[in-house]
Image (cartoon, rainbow over all chains, first blue to last red; front, side, top):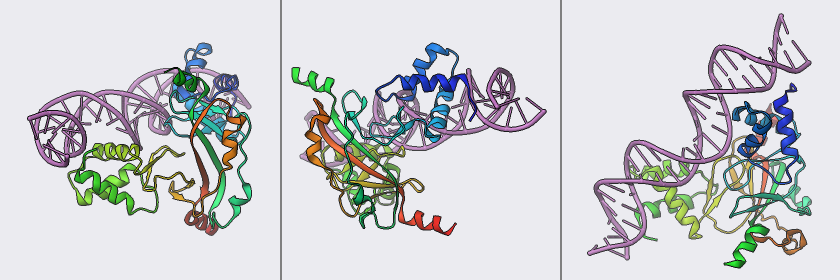
Amino acid sequence: MRNTEQKSVILEVLQTHKDHPTADQIYSEVRERLPKISLGTVYRNLEKLSSAGMIMKLELGGGQKRFDPNPHEHSHFRCVTCSSVEDLPHQIKINLPEINSEAISNRIVLGTTLEYYGYCEECAAKRQLN
Amino acid sequence: MRNTEQKSVILEVLQTHKDHPTADQIYSEVRERLPKISLGTVYRNLEKLSSAGMIMKLELGGGQKRFDPNPHEHSHFRCVTCSSVEDLPHQIKINLPEINSEAISNRIVLGTTLEYYGYCEECAAKRQLN
DNA sequence: TTATATGCAAAGTGTTTGCATAGCA
DNA sequence: TGCTATGCAAACACTTTGCATATAA
C-alpha cells in the first residue's frame, strides 16, 4: 500500500471522529483540505485502510456504510431517527463460549456484530418535549 | 392494510423459507405464481408486512436487505462467501440487564441485532478441500 | 363508491469501476 | 522505471416513487 496525501488526510479526518461517519461525510471534510479529491478515491482508500485493519467498515442497519477509526470489534448504538452511530461507552460482553457451542455446529465464526438501536440521547430528549 | 393476492402469495412464499431471501429472490419465486407482479409491489408489500410485525426486515452486513418470516428478534449467521443468512439453531442470549445499565445512559433501546459472520457449513467444507 | 394497491417505468441513493494521467518508491 | 493511486465520469446494484389503472372493502 502506497502512501499518498489523500490516504493520510482521509485517515486523519476519520481519526478526529468519535462517531462513525459515512463515506460522503468523510469526503466533504477531506475536501476542505484537498479540494480536488474525488469521491471514488475516498471509497477506494477507506476500503484499503479497512482491509489493512487500520480502520473498520461498519455495515449496520440503515443502508449506508460507516467507518470507524477503531478497528477493534466493539458494539454500537444506532439512532433510528437521526441515523447516527455511536460507540457504547462500555463494551457489552458477548458470552464467547457459546460461539463455539453446538449452536454454531460446523460453521466457522470470524466475528460478531452487536448493534443496539433506538433513540440516541439527543433524539430521546426531543421526543420527551413532544 | 388491504388483503390482496399479491400480498398473500408474497407472505406464503416467504414462509416456506428457512433461510432469509432478498427481495429479488422473493420476486422471482412469486412470479412463478403471479407472472405479472412487479418488483415494486414486492418491495411495497414486504415493507408493509414488516411494519405490521408479520415478518422481519433484516439489515445486516452485505448490502442487501433480507426478509425473515419469523418476526421475533433472534440472531443470525451470515456467510461472507455465499452471503447466505441463516438462523442460529439456538438463540444466543444477550445479557439483557446490561441493556439498562449506565452503559446505555439516556438512550432508549428499541432492540438489538446480533449477527455472527464467517463461513457457513457448506462454504467451510469447500474450503477444507482446497 | 372510494381509498388503497398494482404495474410500469423512471428516478434515487450509495457504491464501484474503466480509463487516461499523475506520482510514489 | 514501473506499478499503484488518482480524478473524472459512467456504470452499477438495490430500492423507492409518480402516475394512471385496477381492485378490495
